[in-house]
Image (cartoon, rainbow, N blue to C red; front, top):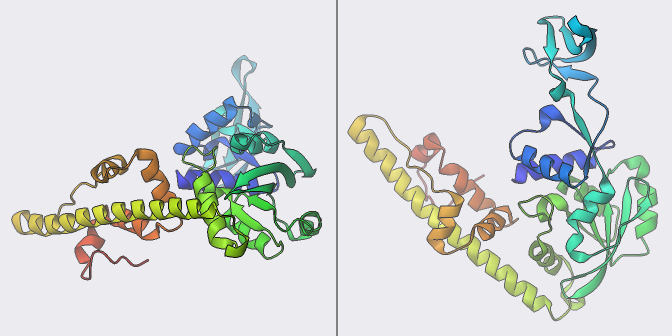
Length: 317
């Protein structure tokens, strides 16, 4: 669900965080349904424009009253002509930032307080990596609005700051003395709960060792366990890829056409190495699992798999 989380976090980061109905597809639709039930996504004004499905041009909506005094939305595309747009495709939802923050950080039982309107929230204190830490959330990075955030946090260098996107983190880190983390990379697969282990592991990696509490040893041990799980999955995928390559060559000789050996599901992959489904999901989402992700994609890329001439255990980007 990583692309789903990224799409959701992108929406949250922009100036007016609104989701359009035509964007809500696949895994994102399931997440949107959950957020609507929790009152995090609130209905807002319908879209005023729509993209023509034929040519891809954005068109203003025109409302026309037809028979029985019913009004329908249309676009009048210069190249494709007029066409009706279903009302359901014009729905939009706005993110209630306070409720969304509360849902994500509910395991810490924090008190969310807006510090700067629609941009900076103080969440309270939480125990992370063996130490009680001040926690903040910031969104909507805009050069013209950076200074108030910097002023608010410059006297709190030990506070932990969360932002929606990795790209947001890079920009805030250049301005703030704090450790800044992206929700895009620290949320679980459900999109509304934190991966505490991933956060504590990153703190242990980024903080000077002299400043990290003794319990960091426990964090390091958990990190080592995660890395060992990634290695197990990697080795199992490599075994499959070798078999898949051999199978493709054998099919080519027998039938004249290569055939791809079906890739095992992530659940099945976990079963083969004795890992639960949620553990497998977190391994694939881990920052250190880039090669694992590449191997996963290679397993369904028959042309690339056939052309592979080097060691199958070394995958390049």
